[in-house]
Image (cartoon, rainbow over all chains, first blue to last red; front, side, top):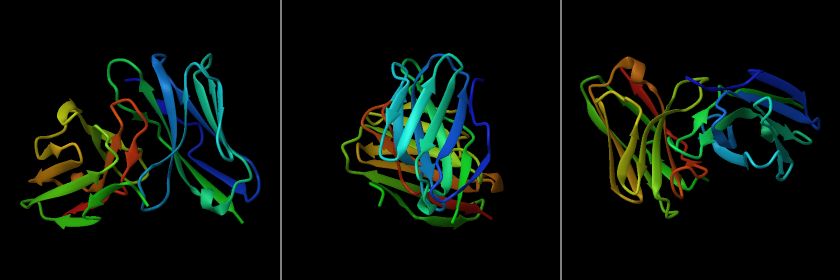
Amino acid sequence: GESVGLHLPTLSVQEGDNSIINCAYSNSASDYFIWYKQESGKGPQFIIDIRSNMDKRQGQRVTVLLNKTVKHLSLQIAATQPGDSAVYFCAELMDTGRRALTFGSGTRLQVQP
Amino acid sequence: DTEVTQTPKHLVMGMTNKKSLKCEQHMGHRAMYWYKQKAKKPPELMFVYSYEKLSINESVPSRFSPECPNSSLLNLHLHALQPEDSALYLCASSLVSGQPQHFGDGTRLSIL
């Protein structure tokens, strides 16, 4: 079936640098996307979401970009900190029919001090 | 601290045991979810309850039996599990189905 996938399984950055985590999705009917952060021993934590009628949304130090033309989603983290080290998942939701999230395969972000 | 509380945090059981996982939220959410997560993998949806009624069962084996006694509680009853069922079991809730989900920290289950 269709799925959400990520380009890089592990991303290593220096503290203070900006991080970009990418996600490709294949379900053209998806119109709502969420980024989750999962730290070791914890459940996924909501970071930011975006609907398909938008192409950019900003939060505190995070920005999500959506390119529907190429079905690509990215999470940008500014001034990456050691506390940002975690696994990041994108998830998609179709607004009709099956109202449940489909998660991508995840990217591990490692922040080097 | 998470607003979705799961107990126990860890559970070790034999293949012939019966146990239950519990999940509780007091955010007034009317959709609740069970996920299974294996190491280094994303969460996989098992069940969705919407307004205390089962709305999605992702073809989960009958040895997993969900129950939603009221809008704040979600249980997962376990019986005759297999070693491959060892995983982190996550509960989540959302205001209604299709809204952002809040996750608990999970129950780490080991089947001997």
